[in-house]
Image: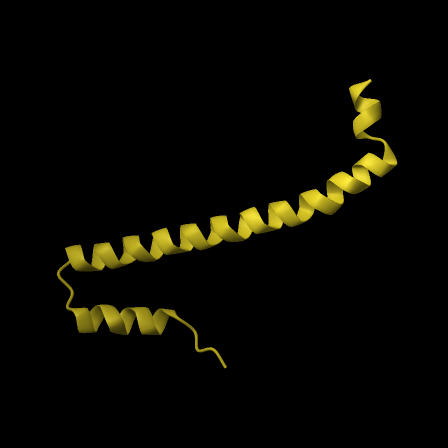
Length: 68
């Protein structure tokens, strides 16, 4: 009964139309949060090693590609 409801063509179409954008938005925000956490962990590890702010800035600038 439930499988007939879910696999109905019209229901499956509606699930895909609304599901894919929702999954995409969640994935984008998950990626941005994890990227921020990773960047913060990198900065903290450089501070723990005793790097100067100028050295940290050089590393971060070398890591980021130029946007044109």
